[in-house]
Amino acid sequence: YATMKYLLLITISSAILTGCQAHSTPEATLQQRFEALNAQLKETVDDHGPRAALDSLTAIANTDTDIAGLCHGLAHEIGHESWEHLGFTGALAIQDDICGSGYIHGIIERELGEHVQDVETTYKTLCPANDARCFHGLGHGLMFATDNNVPRSIALCKALPIAFQRVQCDEGVFMENFEADTTLHPSQYLYPDDPYKTCRDESPIEKGVCTF
Image: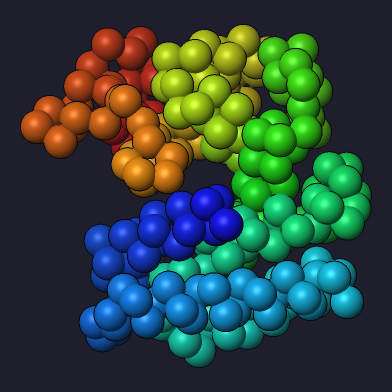
């Protein structure tokens, strides 16, 4: 439940900040809608598989501005539930870019955050070599696995063998950090009085990714 609540909070914030919603909906109402649709989508995964759940979310988000604002977090949740049924490889085989590839991010979060015992010996082998979406999701997953430790996560990204893999992973790390909920998934690398501080000491490549 804490993960679902966390995803709800960051996606509500994202919707408001990016102007995704055409009108102002009370946060309590958004929470109720998120929880209700999340339960429905998980049931769809259970009964009909991830593809059906993703198609259902796509159809709803295309016509409902509130759900469009919550879509990334809901896609994460579909990824979590799909992992439980299909495992990492099986769930990842169902490719879908809906709502910023939230589905893929959710799968990797579940794998690294809850099911991998030794992240440092496993994370490099999780993604197909040319799958940028997967390496972006890997950055999200590393943040879950390290309790939002930005320097540690970036160090792990830097150890990836190919430049674009490192950049995509860095993007996932910084996105996860800047969207962190201070109650349920806190980050010590958020500085409201100096937002650029997180980026300032990074190398030029990471600094560019961080400030993008």
